Image (cartoon, rainbow, N blue to C red; front, side, top):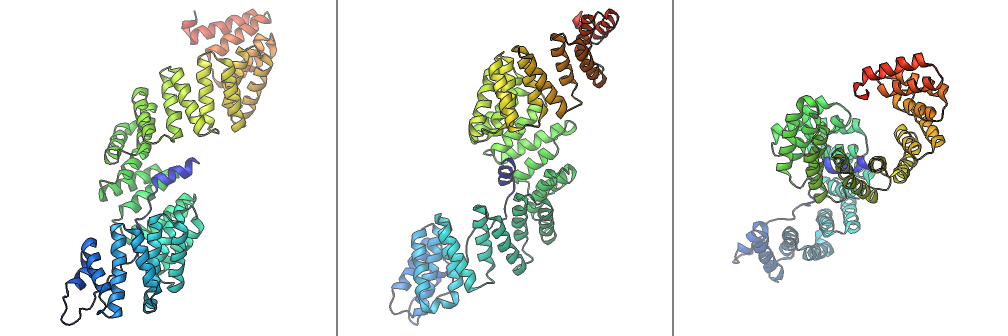
Length: 479
């Protein structure tokens, strides 16, 4: 879910605007008549062109070819002016005229485009199919149909159309950018990079190709190549907000935090409606220890996109950093309402409930987190702590044991199980667990302290004193 939504946001398709092919042609002027209508019908702005074309269509003295040209022109001008119903009516009339047979493919293409503009995708696809049945070399029809198929999520058929378009027009870089974006949405990074690279070879000034290839490099973990491509996209088009966004993410480390913040700022300035940019900048602030500014950005992101689950989760995390437990719980609950399977929301809300000493709610959330991800050690470990707090020492041991099975190097889980065993007076088992914890983390003052108590429980006062001394040495505040 995250991958699809992220790709839908950041992968820009090449700008096939479904404009169709203009049917414009000069209408021949009859002797003795004004050529003004003929010229305006062919080349004037839509409002004037429609009037001129209508004059020709109504003039019975005009020959049929001129009237047919005027009809196609008027349909196109209606389309350009947004009067879709009249455009469809004119294209339909043109298709019914027998003398339009040679232009049938282009008329079907244009009417299909208008159907799509009207929101009628099935009729649009039907007309585009008829256009291609009439002329299998009509590149615009393949591109228009691919655009609709991409919108409908039919990537396989869209790729087939784009493959055909690339064969017919191999030097059109926009085709490769669009096909690369479809491959990216399918998770095929290799083919996506190959297509973006081909687009760049054809047109090195195609900023969108540089930007999209950089995005794929970043998704595959190559932040150096990603930053390089994003920088080139910005050089070619300084106003490409998505490239600034990508560069900010590619620079996202402590050493380049200032530059990264500046790129986020530029991306937001260029596109202030971009919820993801605010969310990403909020994540940067949060990771840099500034929960206040993070909360401000997450709040703007949520205002722009109330369905942005990750912004609720991350704002909840920022509220936890400020110990605003109720605000955090509210955000995690909002995230769960939007996505009932959001693991992090249950895990974090459980921690917030735990901070409020609401053990039952905390245990319930960790249990739900375990149901979603059964092989993650963290919820077992955290549920174990609150089970112990609630007096369920057997359940706590079971949870710590499962956490250790999943992560044998978890010194905290070993220390926790050792502590529970200490409380149950299972001192030998407690000493074994706490010794294992100390071996993994020799600076764990609590592990030394608990093991000292376990030694004392076994009347081994010498080792008890040694461990208590080690604990005090590591954490003098315990004196």
